[in-house]
View (cartoon, rainbow, N blue to C red):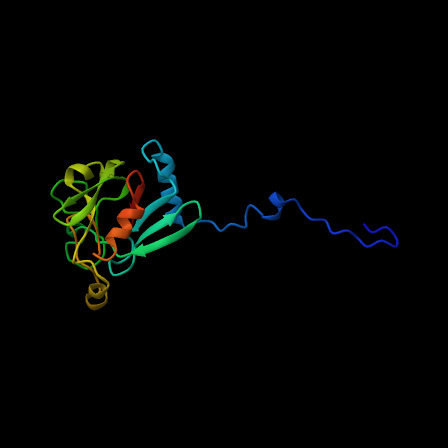
Length: 193
């Protein structure tokens, strides 16, 4: 209210009131599910700043693996990633089913803890530990993150799909080093459809 002869003073709200609690966009549903998995498995997950999120609801020709910076609320990078041949018997490029059974060659959904790196037949790779009933046999099945020649942008463009793994999360040779570095030991990899 202005006193006669004096201009009205502008009221500046305190900094904490300037931003509405609704101003930050709501994360997409898959990110919300990954955050819920972080909370549910928090005792096992040492590093909560970055997660690997796989959207198996998309075709293999699409970049459906996302490294998500949870604190900043943004996708850092997206990559092609394979699914298991047992999840896609017709080789259509789409996940049809999941399995946790040994010898199924299928992908498994849910929360995985990233383990140590090692050098195997696919070069530098990272072990995965399943944290849910749907993927509890991941370590015993040898479900890991590795590179494969059957994962490439060229193959996705020319064939409309990439190749299939035996249930592992396989990346292109050009992407594997960055994925392994960023998604280091003690982080969450979350796969859903």
